[in-house]
Amino acid sequence: MDASFPDAMIPAASPPMNAPARPAAPPRSPEAAAASAVRLRGVSKSFVRGEARALVLDAVDLQIRPGEATFLVGPSGSGKTTLLSIIGCVLTPDAGAVEVLGRDVRRLNRSQIAALRRREIGFIFQRMHLIRGLTALENVCVPLKLSGWRAAASRRRGLELLAAVGLADRADDNPARMSVGQCQRIALARALAADPALVLADEPTASLDAETGRTAIDLLRRTTVMLGKTLIVVTHDHRILHFADRVIAVEQGRLREQLPSASREALEAAAHGSSASAAVELRLDCTTHLGPPAGL
Ligand SMILES: Nc1ncnc2c1ncn2[C@@H]1O[C@H](COP(=O)(O)OP(=O)(O)OP(=O)(O)O)[C@@H](O)[C@H]1O
Ligand SMILES: [Mg+2]
Image (tube, rainbow, N blue to C red; front, side, top):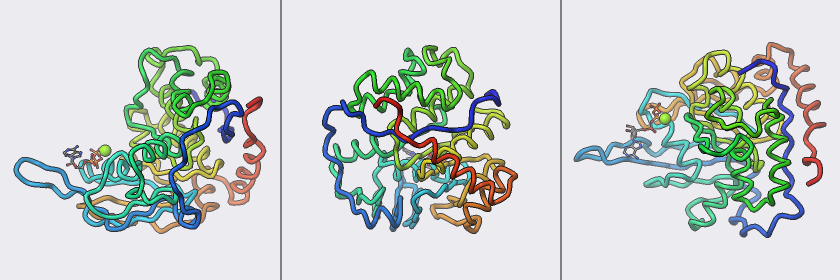
């Protein structure tokens, strides 16, 4: 990834005026959403392994506040992806309660869960899962198409996102001909396209060299903080842990808080080698770029 791509200035999306009516939003408790972006209580998950069942998550509790950046670490096979998949409503636990953005997932039907995933959760996968045969722009616009955006508005939003991650001039290129770091930036733009409240990333730096990985996670972290999104990252990369508000280890079916929570200012300062006041300035500065995309 070249170091020259601009500071993240990805604006929040406002629904396009000409978008068709969307399916009804799943029921939501505003009080619950304000208190926690994610809340798990007594969540267990096991998988059949040979003759036996292997318990991967053993009655875990977890509460993540809105706007918090939480990094999940732990040995291979410890259940990090399983946990992230349950939070992302991709996997159903065997037992326990899952609340995501104020919704009790157990009370949602399949189409409501699909709507929650599509509209309010952005996913970044280790292997990125960009769609072959689609251009960079078309990949970024997939969530918008699924949410009923008209082509012209979706294109404008997609181009804006690609510009924000420094790839404005590669919109019509096929990701197959782009570097891994560039593909990672497309995946980030796609994850943010529909302006989700919750962004989940499973080893987003795993395919990247150290410097590119650091730059990618810096962009991801700053963008989500600026837009007030909740971020959960699974990682093996201990060099990026200073970008976290919280680090939670997944070990032998349990969760263990690894580092005490620190104030956002202190973390910003640590992450950017700057003072706390500079971090506050960064946030204020960013709010000037958060208007709706032009012409929507
Ligand atoms: N669909 C499945 N069927 C059976 N077993 C599974 C399934 N998904 C995960 N597992 C098992 O559950 C355990 C946890 O898997 P998981 O993918 O959550 O680990 P992880 O912490 O993400 O590991 P890694 O760091 O290697 O990605 C592993 O032992 C894995 O083999
Ligand atoms: Mg995994």
